Image (cartoon, rainbow, N blue to C red; front, side, top):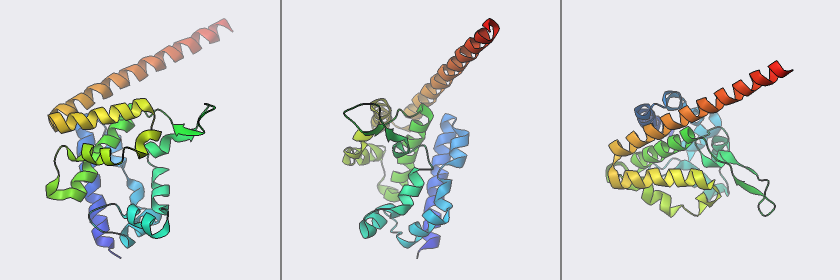
Amino acid sequence: MKAWEHFCTITYHRRLVRQYCFKVGLYRQGLLHDLSKYSPTEFLVGARYFQGDRSPNNAEREAKGYSASWLHHKGRNKHHFEYWIDYTLQSDQILGGMKMPVHFVVEMFMDRIAACRTYQKGAYTNASPWEYHKKSRRVHTVMHPESLKLLEHLLQMLAEKGEDETFAYARYILRKDRKERFMAFCRRHTKKKRYTKIL
């Protein structure tokens, strides 16, 4: 068991994600990111299978054929696209990815950067998250196309233009999304008022 090493790793990862989220205005998500990793279900697995250069969930998956820690984690953290997999209404597809809210796609993007920095250490470059994503692209085919497109756009922008420009773009799309959600809320609220008056 390498409980201390695992604790330091997940705490360092959370600190990075918090810093990145704060830079784009995702304060609540930055504070709450990956708190389930400290729960016994996830922490004990992480300590047992800790390796330092990759996720302990992969080691547990290799040993047991599945990862109980991952199944627990993905069901409690909305920045993972697996959280958004549900039954679809399409006759040719049973399960599919639902469209993720923009702020969770951005948190997922920050999570990818922090994970690569944590495990690659000095070998990390701005292209690392995009290179890692390309290796696991087969898995991401289940993501909603629009959510996948946004994630890949952010990863490619980071690789080509760096953090400052990419984070500025992330702030822009988050502000735009907040405005659109607020306007949609106002439209719904106005319709309800009108309907109440008619009754």
